[in-house]
View 1 (cartoon, helix red, strand yellow):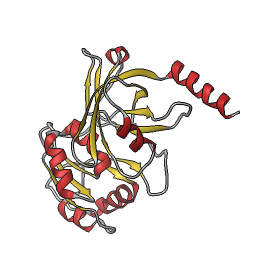
View 2: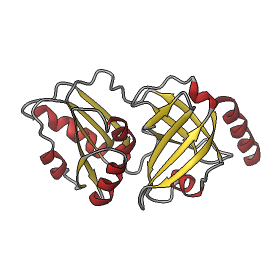
View 3: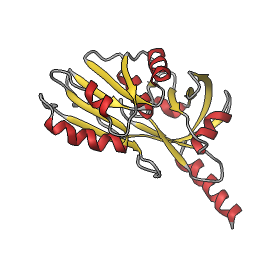
View 4: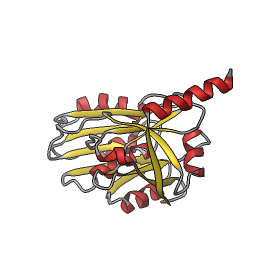
Length: 229
């Protein structure tokens, strides 16, 4: 029965997922890696900044992990992902073993967080899992990045390599450092990453002076849970 299930998963993936090839893999640090992909189907796909793709990590299964592409070149059919690797889960194993020339399968792009209505001044809050979306907005004037991380020095260097100048603070249980750094004058608020950050920040922002104009929020992960995005 297990082999039948695996075969059905492979057949379904061939019918519904985009078949791509890994063209490059670059270690950005001990915990961050960039992977470049190419597929003819990327040439005609409708993508806007903030859209997600879901990567199939293992043959014989339909295990998917979600990423925000930070570069999408329809002329070349090329897409770039950056991943934060921690633990030994399916995504960490995939990024560890994959190499240029390997095939891969993706679902999307699909809408995740829609930033088309964001204003000219933006406060962007997040963590290591926000790296793709931060890189999308890295060259956008008027965006202030305040991010939390287990290793602020490592994350600061990775962001700089991706063209993002950010304030990175240590991640604490009460998010005190993150909230203390998040006080520009007039802005829209974008907050992504850990659900334990997104919810409290959105609630806390109701009492900020001045208050955010618009609030865009997306929890990418939560401790002990999968499939949030």
